[in-house]
Image (cartoon, rainbow, N blue to C red):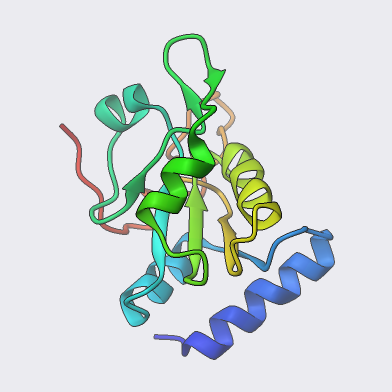
Length: 150
């Protein structure tokens, strides 16, 4: 297992290369290693309740919708809910389906003063394959990391 310092350096290097406004970008495996080794680090799952119920959940993740279902309306209480559930100086690792909403959430949290925001690249389901199906290329599930389904 990689050391936390090595994981954070890779994440910071990616952020610099991608010109991200927050601290870093992690692969799903790096994110899992980080939360396993750092008790303050938390995964913040920003997918909708429907996605969590139908597609699957990450055990121990905080679940705060970025957009609400149905209608994909922005959650106006996102930052307030995040502040109530997670310390602003602890690492916050944002994940969504494929990495786009979690990028927006990490950016917003960083702008709101959270000190250690990271996006989990590939998201929970990864990119679409040649048949337009998710779950076969990249993502938390494809990496074989812990998840449950109802």
